[in-house]
Amino acid sequence: MSFNYAPLAKTAETLLAKFGQELTFTRTSKGAYDPGTGATSDTTSTFTKNGVLFDYRDADSADQTVLAGDRRLVSEAHAYEVGDTVAIGADVYRVVSISTNQPADTALVSELQIRK
Image 1: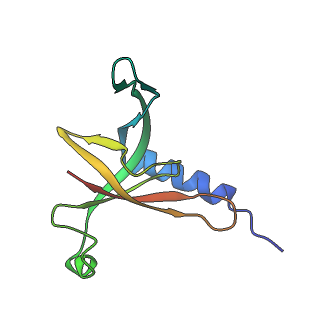
Image 2: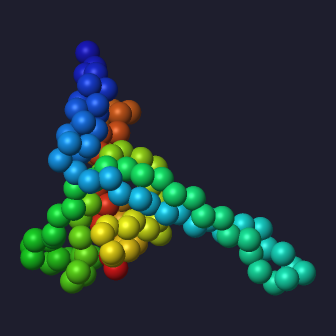
C-alpha cells in the first residue's frame, strides 16, 4: 500500500507561507547566438516562492562544499536550477546546490544552498 504524500506537501506549503517569507527568484536563460551581432539574446524570468533562511553549522562545512557565508534556504518545492538568483532583503544570492525532499513522486520542499 502506498502513502499519499499530497496532504503533507500542502502542509509544508502552508507552513512556509505562515512562517517564511516571500522570495523573488530570477532565472536567466541563454538565447540563440546571432552571428551578425556576435551576441546571444538572453531572457530573464522571475517567480516567487516562500522560504525560510538558515545558517549552516560548522559541521556542515567539513567536506568543503559549504563555504563561509553560504546559507541554507528551505523553500517550496519547485524546479529550481543551479544559477538561479534569489533576493533576500538587500542581498542577492545565487543557487549553487539543490536538494529536493521527494518521497515517492511528490516533492515536499526544496533545500537550496545559496551563495553571495
